[in-house]
Image (cartoon, rainbow, N blue to C red; front, side):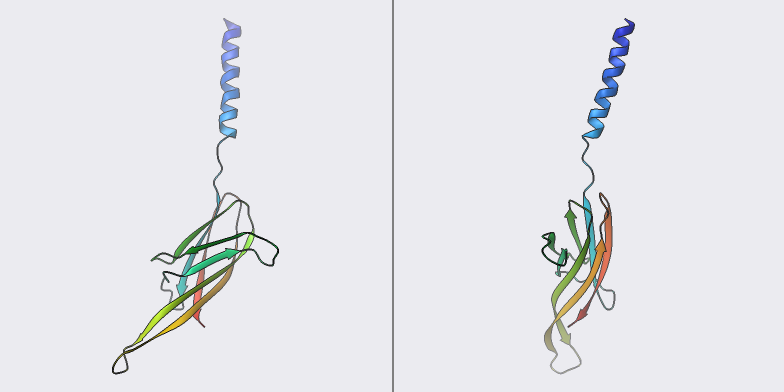
Length: 128
């Protein structure tokens, strides 16, 4: 009876180790927020997170949502470059009739990713 009890305890300890060691780890995530010079979120921006200089082939491209947010998942920690571009329409209501034009916004930065962590970075986009 005592050996059965010891065997059950041993089996539960081993199975506990196996199941906890097989648990998936959290991914490495870069959360990028893009804003303009007035700190207003830029939606629809193409946000590219990549390693530089080449020949590195780690890259992720997403489009920012209405709050200027984009999420990029990676397998490993790294220091990556951020490049955000957007074309916006500008309306000038000071003229009669009002005029519209388009402008390209560009923002750049870097982010240091930690393994299995979520890291946030804000990039300010300026008119080119």
